[in-house]
Length: 332
Image 1 (cartoon, helix red, strand yellow):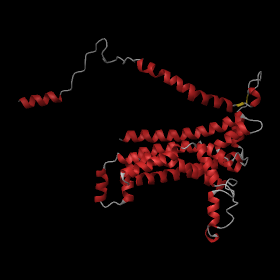
Image 2 (tube, helix red, strand yellow; image 1 turned 90 degrees about the horizontal axis):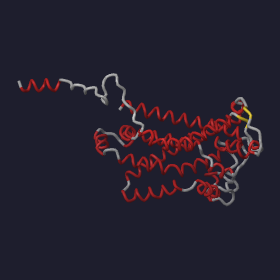
Image 3 (cartoon, rainbow, N blue to C red; image 1 turned 180 degrees about the horizontal axis):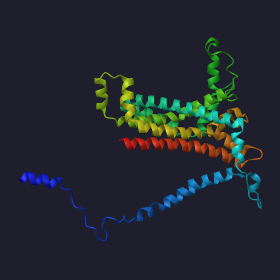
Image 4 (tube, helix red, strand yellow; image 1 turned 180 degrees about the vertical axis):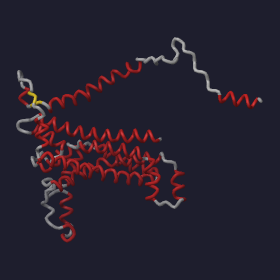
């Protein structure tokens, strides 16, 4: 009898609390406490001033004929251009060529960086701890190198006649690499220039991916790899069945960050191209600078329109990442 009464007591649902003056009774809404919102309000205001207002100003500039003459004292207000900048971009073959170059170069940079960084991260995970720490510190020095310094070093390496790469290639047998490397200019043609640009970006970017993957690998229980090894899985199957599923959110985050960073590459291209006016080697970031500041006369409206296009591309990648993360959170 005691057990039966105790079982009935456990199955009986608890009575709802009485609806008092401050209680959550039926039909009564929860009172919103303004304190948390007041605490974050200063940060939201600062973010709006630093991030939202420049974007709004950029969109406004792209919709007006805004040039350098409008910066003069007593200058007239910029005129509404009825989306003329966007219509000109969509009908300009050069813009589509630059957009294609940007997407192709970004895909190559991101792909090589992610693959190389992941392989190096796995290698560091298998090395002795002291050696892994030493190599990680050395790689992070490359990642922390300013973009200007790294670009100047690589430009010196690939200079005609006295660059280390040209001299080394020229001394190799002609049957292996061909001849005429000593006077070869890497910075004139799109393929050679983009090859050097990709090398610079990958050299500076893969250490961050490697260290991030190394940190993620240390969080995976070792028992999972032992179980996979017992089932007869090799290194390749262990990666796809254990490592990749466990680190999928990390890989998604690193992929999105790398795409955003590589789409905005400007300093390296500007130094390597040495401000050439050859539009076949332009990327969107360089095209913004050329139209908005380097053109004669400078067209701030057109530069802003190109910047809006690149911002939309970055926002699309970010929205796709957030959608993936939300769906992964719902399935857990």
